[in-house]
Length: 274
Image (cartoon, rainbow, N blue to C red; front, side, top):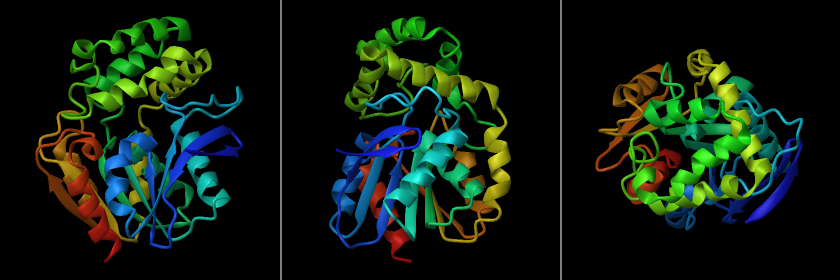
C-alpha cells in the first residue's frame, strides 16, 4: 500500500502501475483485489481505501465526513496523482461516490462503472445500511462495543450485518471491521460518516439529476438477485444515463468484486475497450 497526504488526511491506496488505461476503483482497496489481479495485465489499476471505516489513518478532526466531502477527497486524489481520462468504478458506497463525483464536474473522468450501489431512494441501502446508520447515532465508544459483535461469523452473516452483501467474501468483511475496533479515531470517523448519511436521506435522489448530464460511456453491472440493492435500480440507472449499458451478473450478492471478480473484470475490460 502506498499513501498520500490530502487536505482531509492521509489516504492509503494500491497502484498497479503500467501504461494501460487507468481504472480507479472506489471504496476499499481490498474489495478489488480479485478484479485488479485480472485487469492489471493491460490496465493501470488504482484503488484508494477511503475513510468509511476500514481505513488505517484517521482523518483530521475538521475533515468533511459527508459523502459529498469524501467525493471531493476523491477528486483531489485524482488531481494529486495527475490521473486523467480515467474509468471510475464504484461498488456499494463507492458507487454512490461515483455519482457524487459526476455532480462535482467529473473533469478527469472518461467513463464510469456503477456496480450494485446506493441509488434513488435506497439510501441508506437495505437492512445493513439502515442498521449501520441507526447504530451510528450511538456515541463512538458504544458504537465500538456494538461492532465488537462482528468478530463472530454467525453474527456477521446476519441480514442486518454483512450476510446479504456477499456470498463468498466473509473473510474480507471480517478484516474491514478491524480498524474501527482497534482505533478510537477510526470509530470517530465512521460515526461521523454514518451521521451525515442519516441527515442527508435525499442525497442520492439529488444525484440522479447529475446522471442525466453525463454524456460519456457508462456501464452498470448488477447482481440479478441482489437483496440489498434492488435489481430494478440497476435497470433504471442504465436507462437514465445517456450512454448507459447494463450487464447482469448471476450467483452474486451486492459485493460483486468479492463474489464474481472474473465476470466483473471482463465487463470492465469490455467497457474500457469500447
